[in-house]
Image 1 (cartoon, rainbow, N blue to C red):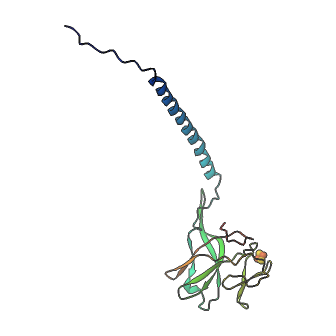
Image 2: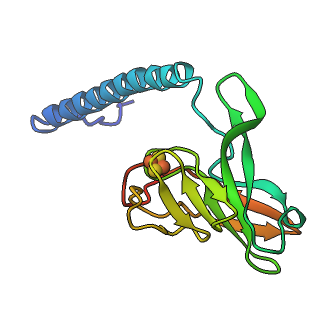
Image 3: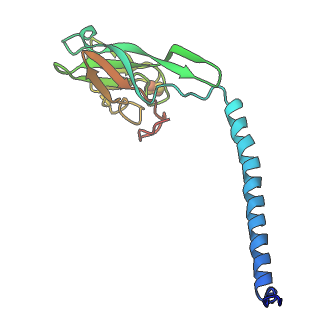
Length: 190
Ligand code: FES
């Protein structure tokens, strides 16, 4: 019995072999580059987390409850309150950490005005002067009106006191606490 005729296996053509080699080389090179990047980036990211234990992940960029609306006089006299926040670092979570203070003024039945108590000039603490119904910074004598605007043109402060976003929720005052760059005419968050 005669065997059926088998066609000879086709040999790779002269043009396809170099092209396959090129593809192999590019794949291997890409794998090496990606692997190298991962081995560099991952340890650096880990080191950044470990060596920055005081990095804050607290709630200061969110709203913080400050007080109840009932604690504010109906006369519109501002009251000063500490701002307490929760700070979280790589190892600890600490509740009720003082991060600043604010003046809150009741401006209506359900509305408030909130000012950061830090002087925009060089960062001293601004006081409320009930006799003058205005704010005064004792460090370099900046004077502010009750709405935070500059009351005396000779004040060295380059801008008004920093107003903060606030909400009254169910009779409680919530504030988005923020500090701003000192000595700048612009209100730049820091
Ligand atoms: S720090 Fe307030 S006037 Fe200078």
